[in-house]
Length: 255
Ligand SMILES: O=C[C@H](O)COP(=O)(O)O
Image 1 (cartoon, rainbow, N blue to C red):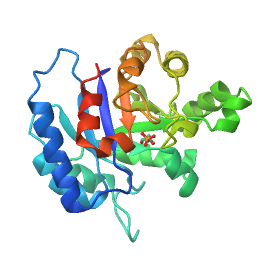
Image 2: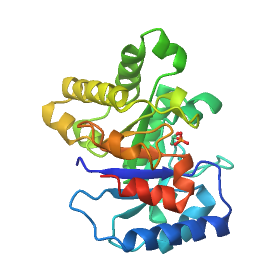
Image 3: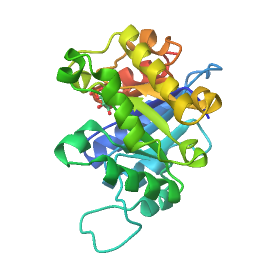
Image 4: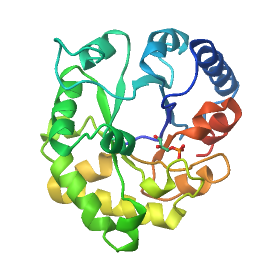
């Protein structure tokens, strides 16, 4: 179901104590506000060891949800150091980020592996937040749409209609991640509209209308309102600015 959504991806930041304190601040600051009709769902994606503790701090039945930053592609087994989707679901995780450019780049995650991870996540009842996005070189060679079209086609569109219903897409231009260089709201809208058009082609018009598409890449309290005002931008996947309660809360209120 399409919805306004803001997800905070803490990446490899925070200690246990700092993480709990940050979430308490955020939930208190947001709880003080009367939720506007278009107020977003909020997903907190801390590192694995913080998930359980933070899950206990999120008000039950509220707009706050727990998300993981990754999962393994097998249900269980001898995979030292890995975490299964089933375990994540059992501690209250509802979402999992898959296909983030940092995992594609540093951990060599390719479409085939991501396909298996998507299936594992969906089988465990998790909702994937599937990331796509081009490098600066790709953009400068005017190959952005071909590149993202291929990421969607090879990485995501093998899912059945029922499976695809559970997926949120995040457009994250790699050149904007952690660089302070945000895509303009027009650049974001152009790619989001393209993604929606490709969904309509792969599935149908209803699926395209119903898919939540987030923008990620140096989104912050100053630029969120303009980005979220675009018709095909349904919210954000926020990195650096999700680590500061005031900034993240401002972003949540930017609809
Ligand atoms: O997952 C989040 C994105 O990589 C964006 O990170 P950033 O907001 O620090 O640029």
